[in-house]
Structure formats: structure tokens, C-alpha cells
Image (cartoon, rainbow, N blue to C red):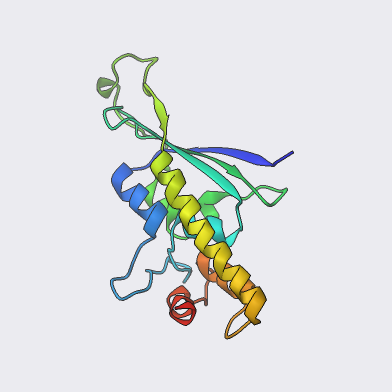
Amino acid sequence: MPNIEILAYLPIDMEDFLFFCVNGAPDGHGGWLPDKYGRKKTGVFDWLYGREVPEAHFYTSRPEDPVPVFAATVQRPETGPMPWFRNIPGFEELLVSDGQVGMASQFPAAGLPIATVNPRPDLDQQFVAGRTQFEGILTSLRKTGQGSFTAEALRAALRGDAGTDLAALLTAIK
């Protein structure tokens, strides 16, 4: 039976958050901005590819909902916990972390802060396309030998691990 985790977060700004999920925090020069620990902010999707997550699905609240909610179901390869907050470089900067999600005047009724959370097939498709590309690179590495880098080096760079250079690896892949 797959090990499925169900996650939910409250983005400060949904549009900025979703951009980060797919693209990370580009530095404008072909790389990614570092976090305070020197890890690259490669984004949620690359971090998931770096963990070799086989399946993920994404959900968001409606734009008119007073509380923006992002949720995901992820088939995790690990058996133990994998906290996103601490492990995805730059992730926590985009989320409500103090528990303050809005004012009572924003809600239609005290019991209805979130009207709906809808599936996002567009994000699901982007995730699958990126994962397919990543798997193709790994297959190529296995067929042609390790080349100038290893599969583990690529996974570490996708996760944004300190000391890695995803931009250089992507150049080598091309």
C-alpha cells in the first residue's frame, strides 16, 4: 500500500506561492536565489523530483475564498516524516506561520472560512511533465554511464541542497 501524506498550507499570496511551487525563486541569471542556509530555492516541484516522489496531486481554494489554502496529496518514498516547512528552501517565507489568517470581518460566517478546495489538474500535469523529464534524465545516465555527474548529485541539486548547482547540471544535461 502506498505511503500517502496529506498536506495543507496557508500561502501569504497564492499567485506568488504557486509560481514558487513550479519555478522556485529564479535569480534572473539562470540559477536560483539562496536561502539563509545557502540552499537554492529551486521550488516545490524540483524538491519533490529530488525525492523521487512518484505521484502528487494539488489543490487550492477558490480565489474569492477569504483564506487562501494550498493542499497536496503526495506518495512519499520515505517511511518517516518529511517536513516541507524545514526542508524546502524558501518555502516557509511564502506561508502564514504565525496562525493569523485574517480578520473576522473577512469571513461570510464564523463557521465558513474556507468555502471550497478544488483539484488543480493544471498543476498535476506540470508535475507529471517535470517528473517524466527527470526520469528520462536518470534513464539516460544509467544507459550512458554517469557522465560528469551522478543521479544523486542531480537529486541533491533539485532539492536545492547547499553546495549544489542545478543550473550547471542542467547546462551539462543539454
